[in-house]
Amino acid sequence: MSKVITASIICALLIGSSASADLLNSQLTTITVGNAIDLLRGEQNAGASQNLVVDNAQCATGMCNGFAGETFFGAIGQVGSAQGLCALVGLNQTVASIGLQSQNVGDGVAPKMQLQTLDMIAGQALGRGEGQGSANGLQTIVLYGDQNATNAAGVMNESTSVLGMQTGMVNGQPGSTALVTSTMGVTTSQEQIAM
Image (cartoon, rainbow, N blue to C red; front, side):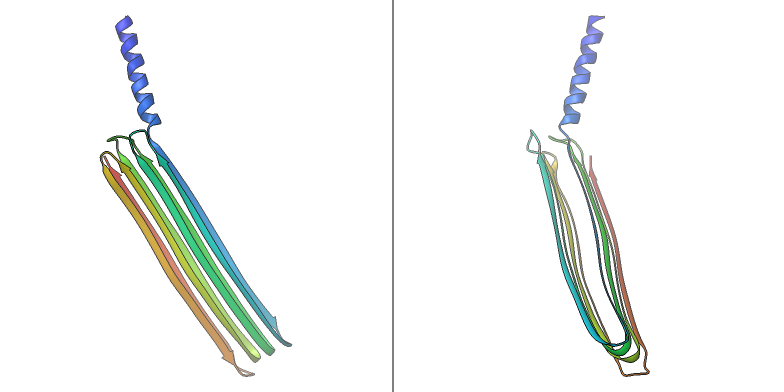
């Protein structure tokens, strides 16, 4: 009876010690940016710009030189301007992105797993009508995700890059109408498992 209890305790200790040696990382980044201008008749002009930078990084090291690291970088720029003389002029810019990274790296020669997804959608619309007017829009998008994992069994790496730019312009005289729209969409998914 005592041999069975001793074996069970040793087995439980081994399972518990191997579970605690796993390096676990998880990172979620959500970005939403919008820019809008509306001119409703009269003589007027307007401008708007914004820049956003997101820089996330995390890492973990294990007892047996295991390593798990994740980084995510995003830079979004939006610039818009409009002018009108008794015109209806509009500008609308949107960028939305969701990045997910997850790692489970066993120390020593244990299994490694990485998952990385990146979704991005961008849209831009410019329009004018009735009187004389114009609008200009520019969006720049840089997104980058990187994962690295190392243990005694080897090395694992994943990376994703998205670079995008949207430009648009409308210009016109009284009585004319103009509309410009542009959209971009990206969906990426990567998964690695080393047993």
